[in-house]
Amino acid sequence: MKKTTVYLPDDLKAALGRVADERGQSEAELIREAVGDLVRGSERPRPRLPLFHSDDPTLAERVDEELRGFGE
Image 1 (cartoon, rainbow, N blue to C red):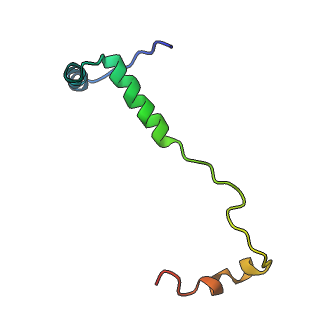
Image 2 (spheres, rainbow, N blue to C red):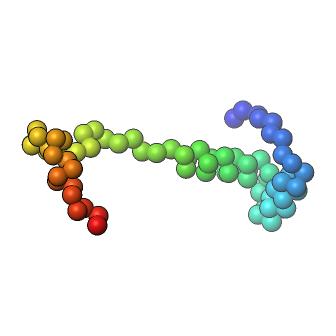
């Protein structure tokens, strides 16, 4: 594990201390948890290709015609 220093505004540091006390966790544990949630939440699954398969090679040329009225 690597040590990292962060600067927090006084009010956020005080709130972090209160939450840590309430939960019986260290401030470092709470920070690791929050950063982990942020990082995992920003990961999007990569689409698997092909996203769409059609045996009709002219479908792309007729996409507007095929989708007319869809979603109305």
